[in-house]
Length: 228
Image (tube, rainbow, N blue to C red; front, side, top):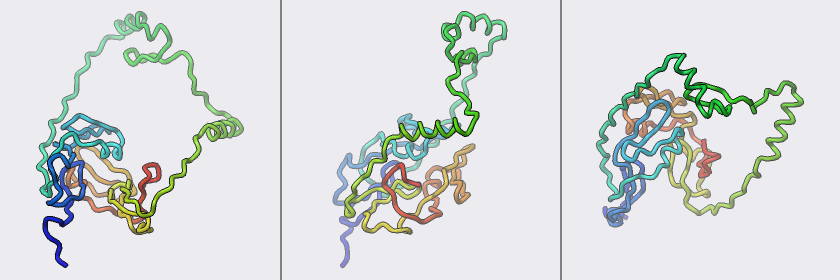
């Protein structure tokens, strides 16, 4: 049976969307996306269009889009964000620094002060010198840890996989040990190069990075705390 073009499932190519849609069901405002590409610097990931940022790559990809429109199968042409120029901070002489430190309210109260590199008077963290102390500390941590919440999931309910590099919609009844293709290793961003540590593949452009094929198989997982 031939499927009409208007009812054929298509995947949106806008950054931050990737939803499935049909030509017959694609109203204005149904797509939420990022208008321009990301910017990576010193471990920080930032969307150049809305300035939303995060250090964690998984949380960064979950930042909702800042624009709305129609879904499309055309890949957007990304404008490269302008590099941020470092801010030059004037340095002060040791004599002037000591004088300002004596008049600084935070230093006088014994709090940590980044301006004068002073440390708090009291150190709350103590070194555990004996195995007994370490064991007692572990027991305290376990006693205050919240209990694991059990979640009942309908095997026919559509879920979104949170494994890195997957993001597909699945049902638990169809889940198995090779259903998911994902990246087990963390993403690597260094000197404008983007890649995955697990498969040692690195590229320069963000859209090329998103298209690097996953290198491992496993179970789908919709739980962010259990995702790999």
